[in-house]
Length: 560
Image (cartoon, rainbow, N blue to C red; front, top):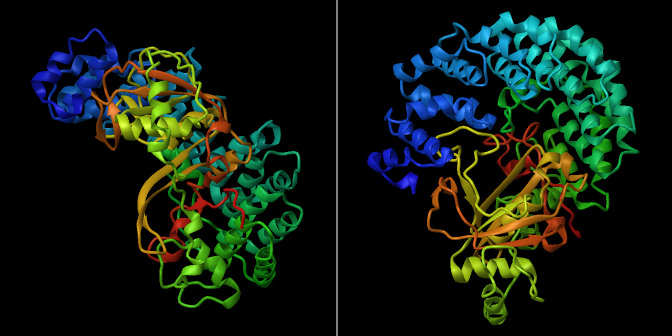
């Protein structure tokens, strides 16, 4: 509705009784270059969602030029939730005056969310707000430690090492040490102790492994630490350590690693350039990884093939040792020259919708759908719920939204969890035209998973036919803890939805029905991928095209 109409219609929506609709209209007007909604944007700087008040609204104000900047100047020194968004608006426009003071003031705000937002803004701006370092050093907010590294560099070393020694959860101080790089080399024993601690969480132990590679330039010493843990590691830790070995290779790019996780500034910091490279212990590393090719677990074998490829077997993909052909071929989905044997085509990597005969279930589904009244649907079919939902999408043209919140009568527009952007960052009600996608978004407990990753594509089967395939994944480390929960699928009318990156309605939507599901209703639960959006995720490209698809952890459960 909003995304396909002009200025006059958007101006009328500024008079809506729904504050979110008014803000959506104001944002869209700003994207179109109109300032009619500037007052709504100013109010949006106090929006309860951080991704809106700190990302989207400042961006929209900036698009209004002097008018938007002048409104931000008037707010940046005023106490309250709006000043951080105003400060970010000014920082994006290259006006540093007042930004540091706003951050310092917000770091002492009574609201813990505002305090942490201030730390995040400081981390994003880094050394440009060096005057906030003292206030950051005294802060105990979740992002304050890594922000102090971004702002103060080596000055933060003492605070970070003390935090590692005292923290009940060592992940954040470990990430801060990784951001310091070689400056933190003396912390190697403490970091290695976390890796060796069998009582530590998987996330903590793998963060320690990745931190070692970034703070210690003695790659052989780091390799020995990793080798010491590989033998007795469980499946998930072993996969992570094998991937760490890939980063020790001299062929691995010595570049800062990009990440699409949020907040981006923290990921850029903690995935800083690697320092460790294995040399004299290279053969021992290769031998140990080669042992993993004989493991019964196909995912361990595939990760081992990945690591060996970086260690020169193959380096450029021109030659593949006979023992690695099958494993490397299993990694590849876009290199027919490598996987030339159709019997070894990596079709098993693709996720495809299980077969379903819609005509066979049509009468039962229609009877069930006739009972829909906008509330909870009393599901009485023997047909699996995913098939019923698929039927509604295919035969009725309806859309689906998965949520852990039951009993919603009207879905209100909300921001993307990562915020920002002219398209998919638009606050809205998000939906999909795919039953399995909706269920996936519903059953993943997002409080336990830092990121999700998914895509739909058309891929060519070994017999030449094109088929709609998809990848559904969650953070690889979090997936080890089986982060699943009960959920509700909201069946939605398509009228107000437009595809702008995602199917989005920027006005409220009243569901046609609500259907309760649990993880067991999802037919591909053990086919989910574990995604690795930091280390290794962006290092393939043109150099290693045959390994590009291994940016995601291949940690789903397979039979082979």
